[in-house]
Image 1: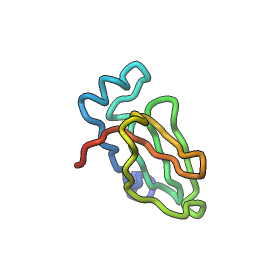
Image 2 (image 1 turned 45 degrees about the horizontal axis):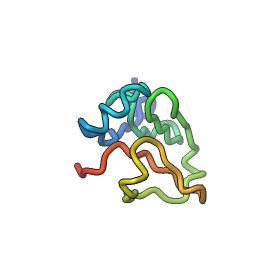
Image 3 (image 1 turned 180 degrees about the vertical axis):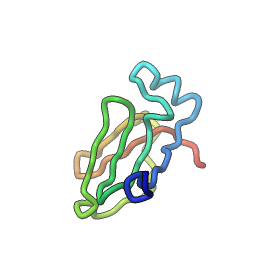
Image 4 (image 1 turned 90 degrees about the horizontal axis):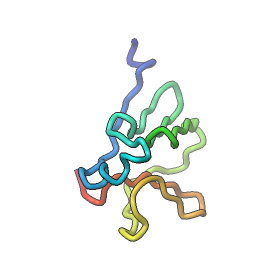
Length: 91
């Protein structure tokens, strides 16, 4: 594979505790990542969340903090923001 085809993959942090909570949903470290490839951002968070978004459609991307009471796994604020929360720790 060429670099262009393979793209760049970024792991999403999953702590040991979070991983235990997500195992029943098929979430593993190999199934949780963001990948930039061929003009698209592919975001995968287990077998149930696998989206491809054209880079031209993305306005912003940033590291954010979500309240602990909201839990882990994919989250939204229903106003256009989506968060893939795998941990409340930092790298």
